[in-house]
Structures are given as C-alpha cells and as structure tokens.
Image 1 (cartoon, one colour):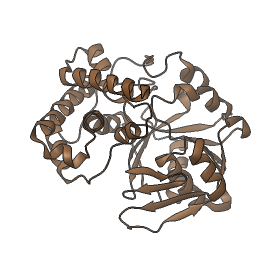
Image 2: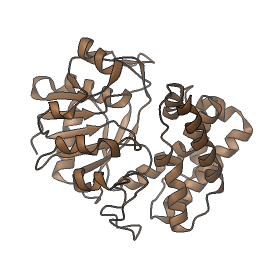
Image 3: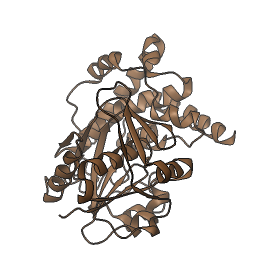
Length: 334
C-alpha cells in the first residue's frame, strides 16, 4: 500500500492534531489535507494548525495544510482519517465516498460503537448486521463500505481552545485494528506511516475489545459530565455520582461480554483507575458548552440498544439516556 495523499475528514481537536503531526512527521513525502468548517477552517487556512501540550511534555508544532469544507475540492486519496463523531458520520457519507478509489483505506477514530461494528465479527453471532441508529439510510455501508475501515480507539485528551489551535493533555496512544481481526499488510502500512508522525500506534487483532474497554468509561463519564457540567475529577469526588459511574460501567461491560468481548480489567478496577484522572472536560461536555449536538447514540444509546438485542438489562443507562437526550434537545433549542 503506497500512501501519499492523506485527508483528515473532520479536523477538530483530535483530527486536527493527527493532521498536524502527519504533516510534520512526513514532510514532503505526503500531501496532507483537511476537511473543516467555520472559524476553525478560516484559521487553518490563514495560520495553519497549531498543536500544544497542556503539560508542556513535548514541544508545540505548527503546520500548514490544505484546508477546505468541500471534499469535491480534493482528488481521491490513498488514506482517509476521520475525526468526526459517530453521530456526524452518516451526514458525511457522500463526501467521504468522493475521496475513495480502489485501495483507499479509512481510519475511523471513534468513541463508542461504530456503524461497521458487526462487519466480519466472529464473536457475537451477528456478523454483517447493520445499525440503523448510526447509519439511518445505510449510506455509510453503501458509499464508504465496511471493507475499507480500519478501526481506531484513541486515548488522547484534546480540545480546540481557539480556532486553529489545539491543546493535547498528553502524547496519547491509539489502537488500530481490522474488523476481521487480521493483521493485514494495509494495517502494517498505516501503522508504520503513523509511527513516522510520532504517534503511539498499537495494532490489535481484537479491536472490539478495545472499543468496549473505552466505551465502558465513556458511557458513564460523558453523559454524567454533560448533565452536571462537572469535570471528571469532580464527578468522582461525589459518592453518589461515583456510584452511578460504577453502575453504568458494569452495565456496559455486561453488554460487551454478551457480544463476545473480553475485558483485561474488571469494571471495579477500571473505576479505581479513574481516581487519578486529570481535571479534564469530557468531549460531550465540550460539545454541550459549545451548543453542538451531543454524541449520545454511539455511547449510551448503543449500550441500551445492544442490551435490548442481547437481553442484558441496562436500567441506569436507560435513565441517563432519557435525561441526556432531553438535555440535547433543550440545548439545541436554545
């Protein structure tokens, strides 16, 4: 797989950081472009992408990349990386489709259950089942195609602090995996390329395990932080909220296990680790404060939906889902 033309579709906090790091790491060996919008797009066009680390652990970087809000401005790409959230992807299916040619792979950085989840899944007994909650008209399945996807689970705190300016809480680590579980030549090529950009890439043959391990925490902290407007550290300082976090983690773990996923640590061990989390705003809280639609369905919504599908009760998630859905309606109305 030869990778020269690379587009980051959705160059917000994490996508923008990827674009800047790839441009810096590969230099003239790659043509890096981004799809962005609004004031963020204008700033990228004028000043480039600026990435800094909140703990000053690494030097900041500033990179100029080609930026547009219209995928039709770009030719077909060798590699596409999406920084869009799960509830935004279906609306971008046609734009993504324009960027594809024979052999193009798409690294999809996503929190929660992805639209392609059951493609070539040998664990759940539900292989090739589509998820209309995430792909309502089947456009992603038809125009992008699950065969092109390389899944990505990111552990990276990131925030757009001003148009064109991104703050990272750490250097991050990223699990990459084929839906089939195979370690393919394409996966090796993408891993090598991203490592050239000084990204910590961890290939895995069990990407769904990583999806559920992260989802177990996101399904709890994201909606609770949005409902309370509290930082993660403050959520854990309240005994009642901390207990609710644990209940949601256990519900999500039970659903994941019912689909054949394995967890390296228990929900209680995961909960204990959260005591050391920094005073960070979750991505859902960031979106709430910015007046953006909330990433409810890929996180809590899919825990509830897949719990119903597999017969696993999710009573706390049910309640949190109802509350967060109404919060989203009211926030967008205002």
